[in-house]
Image (tube, rainbow, N blue to C red; front, side, top):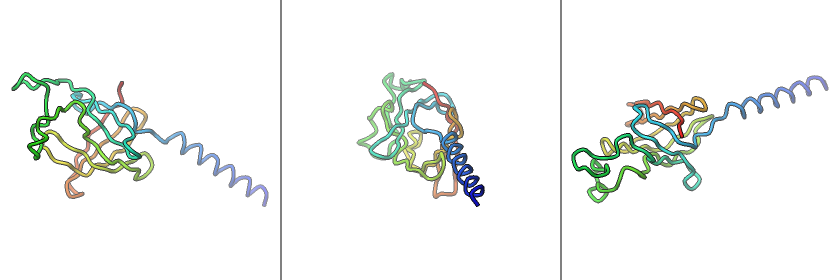
Length: 144
């Protein structure tokens, strides 16, 4: 009986250690799939959020000025700069290495349900969904 208890305790310790090793942090700076945007994921009041911190092409060729949120449905927000814009909000844990929240797409001015899964220390997948069924995945790579 003591051997069985010791084996069970050992298996629990190994399982806990393995879980700790595979748990990945979402916090940090990530490069978008197309290489045009970097976002920084950080704690925002107990939930995770992502803010645009770099753009490959920060200047709008049509205006010669920094890019703005020109497709936002709210006219009062169309002049706000894309740099510094929070594009992922309210990410809460939804499983191992997974978070759920919302993602704002400045390309169309719409907000979608979002799922973030950290695949490894250097790769994450952000999924944006309309009505929970039509989804599109974007692969992000950790960067500095």
